[in-house]
Length: 129
Image (tube, rainbow, N blue to C red; front, side, top):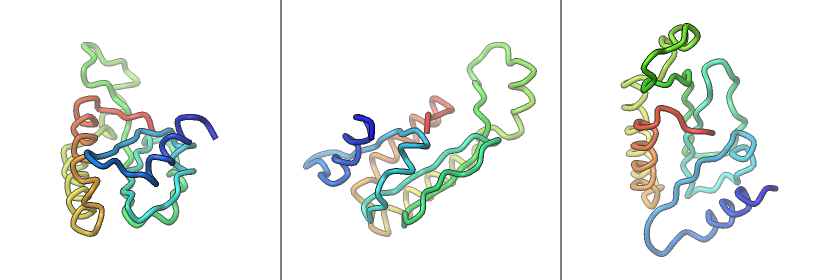
């Protein structure tokens, strides 16, 4: 197990006294995270990849979209082909709804953190997971 994953898992078992925790993990690392009741997971997979193996999470959202750099001045032909499968406003609304439902159902400690993560997702258009 790599140092980053070891650190993340350790922090999941010892929530901070103040503030929230949000972690960005690779697919391989995310698949090794224990399914704790206090953890809400948003799994984002490239449109051309299969889903990650994340069994046991009570609060699990899966999204799939193409990684397109909307900030690029000139999109390549390959990137333009991916546009129909790119991140959408509807998916953004789904994330907000998931965060709200997870918080209401028992992941309240993570609501603010997930919102910050969501804002980072919207700004960056891609998250390495």
